[in-house]
Length: 136
Image 1: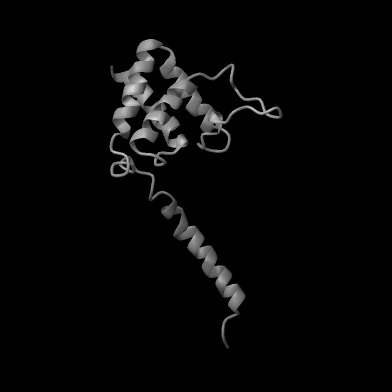
Image 2: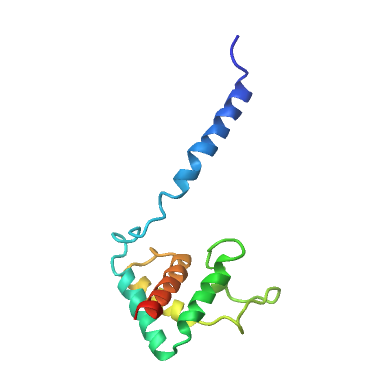
């Protein structure tokens, strides 16, 4: 007697989701992801963060806080960069560093347009700011 097809397919789908899909989600999380598509990325971010911290020593902490507020609710999606609307008020008065992210994004668009996501820029900027303060 042939197996019940809908039950068999459902079982196969669940096995696929539990064993294969989670590992696939992490394939693109690697430090060299932009090496070919945007090789100047580390240099651009490092320059902007260095200049911002030289101008205001609290900027490293502000960029880390910006990243924290971006990632804490629904994951790192650069939603903190969205402009306020009449229905939604953001953390404009409490968060800082938006101009640093805007400067990085402007330079990246000049060198490798439509390549690096805003969420990645926020994360990489926070990482570079912490590194700069801890090791230099």
